[in-house]
Length: 141
Image (cartoon, rainbow, N blue to C red):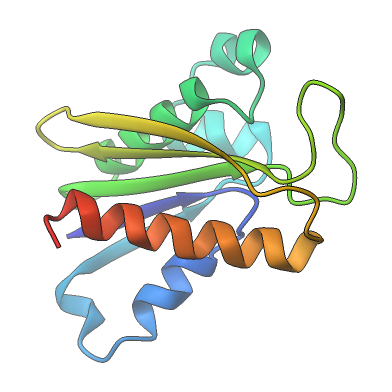
């Protein structure tokens, strides 16, 4: 079973998974944790991680994925936190997206992708596709 923990994509990965006929056999639930409070309350992300590294960080993405597995019946979860735009900063530019994948057997991988200032819609679509690809790789596909 799969769970998702999404911030900047707002449920797009979960929607893509549930677009598939028969997805109830593989998809348990999705957490849309757009705010920092939601990350803390729904996924048990340590507030100190957000304060130290920022919500858009591999550390927070890992904690989101771990929290999604812990608070679901899933064996694997993918997480996404990023800056879709417009905007960003010198240190966290528009198009930066952090991903996490966690498994119930404690394997956690993280990755940061710089999609660039493609515009909000394209950054979100690119992040969705990348997350789905990460899931496929984690599942050995």
